[in-house]
Amino acid sequence: MELLKGKTALICGVAGQDGGYLAQFLLAKGYTVWGTSRDVQGASFRNLVSLNIMESVQTISLVPGDFRSVFMAIRQSQPDEIYYLAGQSSVGLSFEQPAETIQSTVVGVLNVLEACRLMDYPIRFYHAGSSECFGDTHGQLANEETPFKPSSPYAVAKASAHWLLDNYRNAYGIHACTGILFNHESPLRPARFVTQKIISTARRIAQGSAEKLQLGRLDIQRDWGWAPEYVDAMWRILQHGTAQDYVIATGVTHSLEEFVSVAFKYFGLDWREHVEQASHLLRPTDPLLIAGDPSKAERVLGWKAHKLMPDVVAAMVLGG
Image (cartoon, rainbow, N blue to C red; front, side, top):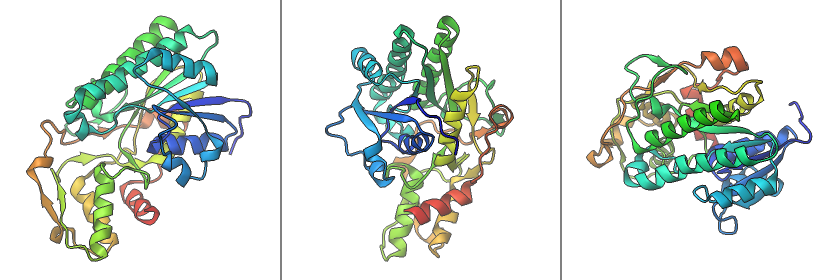
């Protein structure tokens, strides 16, 4: 792997799935890596511990909604690159906590952009966008020119942050980019995410549990990729000479029912015997199909997903 001695990165939200893998990726490239949490003293950083990189990451407290906190963290770490992966990241939870979702995402991104504008040296800024901004793509592959039609508080927050970043890039010349990432999974996914819930429940059933896996709609279709590959895309986005936005996806969609079937099959189970639909898990406005076209990322960045959904399920099962 190419070593880039002397570069410093600040990862906002380093404790999450993407933050952990990105920190590991950048450390291997020779970066000095700083990672933030709202309360460094109280955070567990279990993902950094499980990846065996806790001692290599310099941690610092940062409250996304507090401009002074953001500014001081950036001034202390003096990063060449900032990766904003912080904020409430669950679509389902955003319906229960819309204000927190908007605050942590939109105001957090605004504060980082404003801090970058006020610094006396150029900083490259990556913002973690989301395919949820597109809403239902109705069988079409969404690309960088596809209009947004967000259908959850989470998607509204991500879309708002996307346009804030676009405005700062055009108005102030900040090298700021959004990676519009489609679903990407790994064993580091928290239990509240449906993919981890599926695999964890299937494992327990295979070990003798009599429980049922409760899910909402099984006919929704998503593009599931492998998180360690997606952090490579984040890095590539910031290395390009011009600041642009990119759709990051595998280009292949599957229904949630297919994901469940593949997962249960790994444990020698027929999913139909162990899954039931629960009305309380049905979201008010859930896009049926979100499909992505990652051709620009391959053409411009040389990035392409290698693990597709069945490979992702296998890796989560084996890594769990």
